[in-house]
Amino acid sequence: MSTESESPKDPVVRHRLIVRSDAGDRMLIDARSGGARLPAITTDDRHTAEVDYINATVADRFGVATIVLRSLSHSEPVDGVVDRVHELELRGDAQSGDLQWVDAESVTCEDAADRAAIERWRGGRNADITDGREWMRPGWFADACKWIDAALVDQNLGAAEEIRQVRNWASSSVLWVKTRAAEYYFKALPAGGRVESELTQYLARHFPTIVARLIATQTQRRWLLMAACPGHKLEDVRDVAAWQRAAGDYGRLQIGCMPRVGDLTALGCPTRSLDSLARRIALLADDVAALRVGERGGLTDAEHRNLRRAVAALQDRCADLAACGVALTLEHGDFWPGNVFVDAASCVVIDWEDAAIAHPFFSLAPLTVGLMNVGLAEGRNVERIEAAYCAAFESVAPPERLRRALRLAAPLCFLEMASRYREHRASVVELHPWMRDLVPQTVRLALSRQ
Image (cartoon, rainbow, N blue to C red):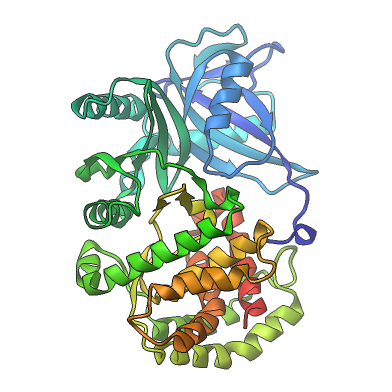
């Protein structure tokens, strides 16, 4: 979300790979030079949850099939290079002339960074996987594949011809599944992601056209097998009419959920009230470290002063928005156009991880920022999308009050996002540093929309 002038050139990423045996007593080393080195690959920078390109590059470079179990570290850029360390599981035999098995306890690498990576891995090798993240254990992938195969057969959808790991991080594990006739996605969630699992199933029962079609679920393990969404991500669509339809469909979902707030709360959806946001705005403005004031990518001193001066007005804005008379309902929490799929007839919203009971109009601001990012914000396009969204709420308040509520909500949406990003665990941010950058970036968006 930052501008190009604020962002340094994307670094090159060097991935050091701990390819372990099932028991963890052996690991593969690259012994081509005559000394022990960890296998390593170099790639361009990607989203830190993406892993399919890592497995593909390992296959091309070393001729072995792997699964990424977890990432262990992510360095700051040094001379344009980021070092990342991953623990991998070998699929099948290590039929590679470049790699050989060694004892994991006795191996000593000639490179200091390799030695540090091995020590980090040894220190956490036998630790229990926290919060139900079973996908970080050897053998889980094979278990998941068996369940996927059985689910497809049970639904008469044919056998899986290919199952590929797509994403793997603390928030979820995502697999791509291909049969002869169709594509599917499998998603596993941690225990802390139970709400997303149950909410997705609830929406599939009551609003089946707005979420991906569910094929099978395993509630205890928080597993979802879904049909691939039809159409394209909204961020790749240049037809403004499709954006209008998506905004209207999503607004009608929110209206439909107003009488279901009790159900959604029972599922575990948190409530993010405007009173709570008003208090959190003051805490956010005082958190110099989270705002990264004076650092590259952080707020400038002038921006921080502007935020501090605006706190009282922003808190008043929360009260004014509450007085507009639009009730709290389901709010996606991350309604960027990359989470919306559209085709000629449908709109599907994915990734409900951040969903809550909140002011519905918090959703539209990221959608319209996305419109600007793809160059479609000229003329009356934003007004057309806002009108399509507001039309869903005509039974709630008159049009002029709805338009005023949208204006009030625009900066508050991004401050609410910033407050949530600020609360991420330090251990997660360490592995995904872009989360740290999102706090000042979303605050900057809020300041531009007062």
